[in-house]
Amino acid sequence: MPNPVATFDTTMGEIKCEIYLDKMPITASNFIDLANTGFYNGLHFHRVIPDFMDQFGCPHSKDPKSSRAGTGGPPDGTYKNLVTGATEKRSGGGNIKDEFAAKISNEPGTLSMANTGSPNSGGSQFFMNTVHNDFLDWFSPGESKHPVFGKVVDQASFDVMVAISKTPTRDDCPVTPVTMKSVTVA
Image 1 (cartoon, rainbow, N blue to C red):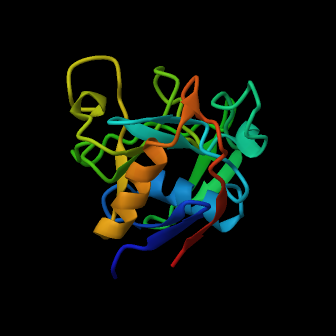
Image 2 (cartoon, one colour):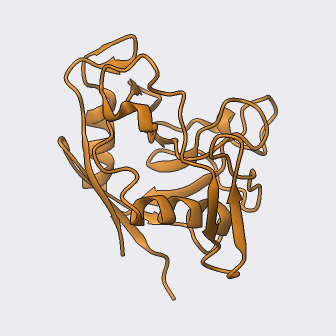
């Protein structure tokens, strides 16, 4: 069975990404559950940095000018691991356990789980990498551990990621809000 594809419908265009359910079932199942429940719809990119990444997925970013954007996660609860059928937990502010399963580098066009820098602190926020950010790899030296759970399926999707990263910002937040109209997974 092929991996699912997520369609991110933004105010700057559409981004399609394969979600690595086969290689990263805990992280991918968490993302798919959040997408399917509409968690991401109406949120804004709260941090974009050219030649680095676009950050997205904080519930506080529903208000594009919120000073709390970047600090939130999903509600605590459970979701189904779509590969094993096991029940996975979100706890301590919607955090999931780190999944260091597949050694996939933070290459251009990949999606990786954002976190606070502490273990098991990812939840709903993720990076859309616009360059090769190998220092974020969970298997690289250093503190940053950001597991990759998806990648763009075409150049047009990557071009939208890059365009978002280059929007004018104030304190890394887009001056003109970039809205996620919807995220669907098929």
